[in-house]
Image (cartoon, rainbow, N blue to C red):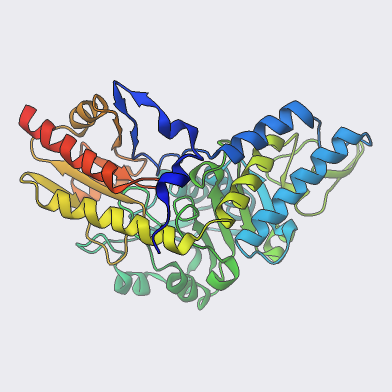
Amino acid sequence: MAPDILTLRRDFPTLAQIVNGHPLVYLDNAATTQKPQAVLDALNHYYRDTNANVHRASHALSGQATRAFEQARIKLQRFINAPAPEQLIWTRGTTEAINLVAYSFGMHRLKAGDEILISTLEHHANIVPWQQVAATTGAVIRVIPLMSTGDLDMKAAAQLINSRTRLLAIGQVSNALGVVNPVKQLIAMARSVGAVTLVDGAQAMGHLSVDVQELDCDFYAFSGHKMYGPTGIGGLYGRRELLEQMPPWQTGGEMVSHVSFEQTRFNRLPFKFEAGTPNIAGAIALGAAVDYLSGLNRTLLAQHEHRLLDALVTGLEAMPGVRIIGRPDERVGAVSFVMDEVHPQDLATLLDMQGIALRTGHHCAMPLMQALGLEQGTIRASVAFYNTQEEIAALLAGIHKAREFF
């Protein structure tokens, strides 16, 4: 049975907008998803009715805020099947989560000659922190290359993983090409040589069912705003024994159990890594996003998204002068393409005039674009379950009009 997308769209107020005289066609979901009314209501309710700091007071509002804040942590823990809620650390998002691991684990545990394995597909957030770690510790970064399809070269990966590999940091889904990486296989390969594993799940959480225990990863980083939650909130799952061994990254209030001028004792998990007043409203609203997603048939919605991408790929393939970047075995969420002799930004500007929102450029993946020989980057259309076949048709028609203009 097909999902009732038109009914679901009513949950997202932004989608009803008129932009440049046209109904909004929002196809920039890999950058950020729109928010359902339930998430907006959760934000409003916290600030209007329960606004208080958490964990630090004995009054009623603080108790209500603390319960909602910690209940949201439990919701996320269950959503990704983490073993316990204290293994879920609140962060500002995927970038901060990866930086936490880089500075609290990488800077303290890696040494000269150790190897950090990443891939050509990585977002800058899963490249630059490791470059900083390598520059400080003397560790070496190795990169898994791509095949012509855009998939990772797994034979090369098998050769790169060796006794010197100490960390595998890999994206589950490419934000630029939509490639779904075989992360479970890569994690197993890395674990066979004793390497620690981190998964960048920013692009996966809104499309795939994530089970960190089944993946068997040591760390999993994600962002709320790419899974229908608010901006400025996300999380890091970590294996308990690693989190307990790692020193705090940021220090201050909340992450301490005792402070004197002579010494400080740090708090237990998860608070050891949550210095200062957290994004209370964001965490509670992300919990509301999890409730919303959990109430949907995500299998049917994933099938719907695949049909949207199939229609987009088929339509683009039929257009002279348009080239799709990457033909992976498995794609989710996004399609990148270029048009001969037309700058991506120019094409996107004309499409924006028709109310169609896309993303252009390097997509925070400059090394990938360099490897593909795409100095100007690409145009990226990225879908969510609330998108429709009519919106894909509008995009394709808009590209036809732009081709005629150019």
